[in-house]
Length: 110
Length: 114
Image (cartoon, rainbow over all chains, first blue to last red):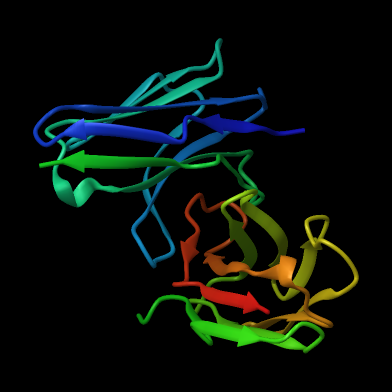
């Protein structure tokens, strides 16, 4: 079955880069996603990458995909206190059943 | 658009009582999902519908849980009877169609069963 794993916690200083890592097991995944959850709110899609891509950049966000190792990462440049949240990695196969990781809580220290 | 609407936002009930959670998806979206989030198990997909039809309910924990989608603009998740281990945040999400990659989440219902 599908499994998506992430480290539980990451702490960085404001202005530094954050790198959140994720591994997944389903080699047939078509889409890989990063969602953000702020306290008391639902998840919100940050960015996604198709499985035939290696990298995607969107302003301060960079997604790297190593399909061979089934490893996905999210880099946030110039991390701000407003980036403090839980970040979920997720994978899906083009239809709607998406498997979410356990979430990584990012703490940004001023 | 108001986004996905869930009600109530908070529910506190006693063990054994029936609980009904409600969701209104974004207008025009034809896929709807129910998730449960706990510290121990993370985010779990319970069931999803496409065009009001349940497609996959393999995540529904047991017979005490049931979900319906009588029309395109409304869905319910019912727990009867409720137990303390059902305490969690329940999220509803909707998506435009089966080919769309993004799910839009509601704010969640925090359920506490005492």
